[in-house]
Length: 378
Image (cartoon, rainbow, N blue to C red):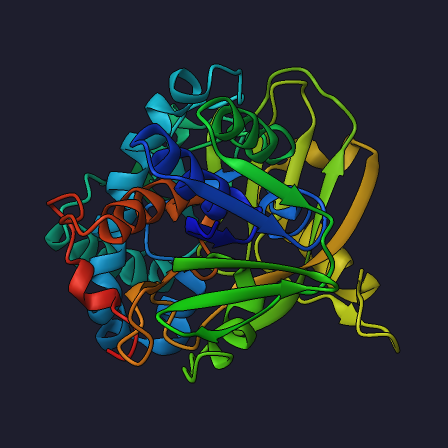
């Protein structure tokens, strides 16, 4: 018997889509080539973003940011869903909303922040501009050369190591079937439905959801679709535990940085610094970029300089050139739906997955977001 829906990809997006479908009474099977949550969903730094990322704003400009604005609205709505995610799956995901703080170290950076904030506010994001006294009052742990910034109270963090496995357990409890460790997956049209093949195993369904991260583009090619999906190697680091120091998700306007303190006291340091790729195509930590990343972090929060680094790791992050999600049914392959949020997939996954689960069932996605801006082929 064919399944009603097959979801390919066992990361946050795929598992959440399967959970929503199973709870709606839809027969759903999830297929994951490797380990549930074993790729970008667990390798990221656990940031919950809503602001327009400052580095592409600086490099791509205000016109790009205005085109990205629908994604800001989606991220804002997704963070609201994150607030209820622990209750939805019945597990402690270490979700905490301490707010996101973007720090400037000169007036030129403050001018960039003001321009970005204007676009974010137009997209419905609540965000405050801070002068130096307000910044010092909010974040006394910052270096004295910080001159101001912006604060978005709706941003936060979660533990990526526990999130996706907890969602997968909830999906199974709701009736979803999960097939993990299948090896490479391919798809093709099969009469009025679609075939999914992994090694000697074969499944069939009338509807597919492709939520396989950077592998989504290769899968979509199996039904004749070309998607602008890319993968980029980046790296993240974690320190030894420290006493409570940084209650916020911290960014730097002048250089790439994300910084937060986890529940166990460790500090996670990232920001999208490039990793290198070895001869076998595997991402590896680039020591020069590691040194630069840590230097930025220690400038922003000087107390970090006294901590030991415990681990650094590299992984592929899913991307697109325009940073926009790809969400919806493929026009050239009816019945095949894409759930792909580049760069900020950990943050945006809950909203994207709720929307895709609705679309798969022939329902309208949640209101308040311009989902048409993310349709494949737009």
